[in-house]
Length: 222
Image 1 (tube, one colour):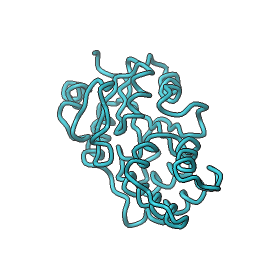
Image 2 (tube, helix red, strand yellow):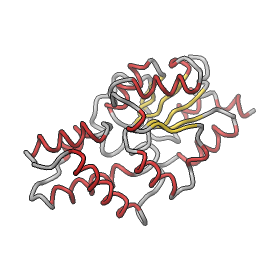
Image 3 (cartoon, helix red, strand yellow):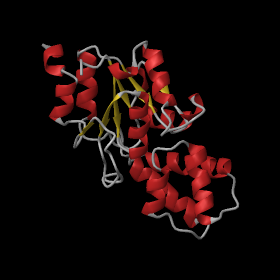
C-alpha cells in the first residue's frame, strides 16, 4: 500500500489499559446483582457500543435492568477506578510523537461514550493531539458495522483505503476492514485468542517496527 494519509486509533485496550478497568467494572456491576462477570461475556461485549454490550449482559444473566441503567452505573464505577490505575499501552506515546513529527493526522474512533472518552483523555491531556474523536453518540450502527470508520475517512477527506486503523479487538478489526481501511490488529491480554484474520497486519504492540515500516515513518521523518 501507499503510505497512509491518516491514522485512526481505537481507544480501550489499544491506547490505554482500560480493558482491565472494564473487566473490574463488569465484575462489580454483576457482583451487586449476585452474578459473575466471566471472560466469555467480556469477550462477547468487547469492542461494541454500550447498548448492544449491556443488552447482551442483560440477556446473558436474565437481568431486570435496562441497558441505560447498566450503562450509567458502569460509567460511574469506571470513573471511580480510573485514578491511580490508568496507563498508556506500550509504544503509544512514542508513536503519537512520531506521527506528529511526520505531520500525519490522527483521530480516535471508540465504541465508548463521549463521557468515558473525556474521562480517559482528560487524565492524560491528550484530546487536543487528535484532529477529531468519534464515539458511540456519533453513530447509528456500532462496530463491527463499518459506519464509524467510513465517517472518519469522510472527516479526513480521504478514501478509507488511505487510512490506517489500529484495533485491539476482533469486533473493531471487522469494522475497519469492512470500511476498506488498512487494518492493524494489536491484540492485548484480553483479546489475544480472538480471530484477527481480517486484519491486514497483526503486531505485538504499538512499538512494533512493522507498524513504523507500514507508516513509512523513517523516510517521512528524514
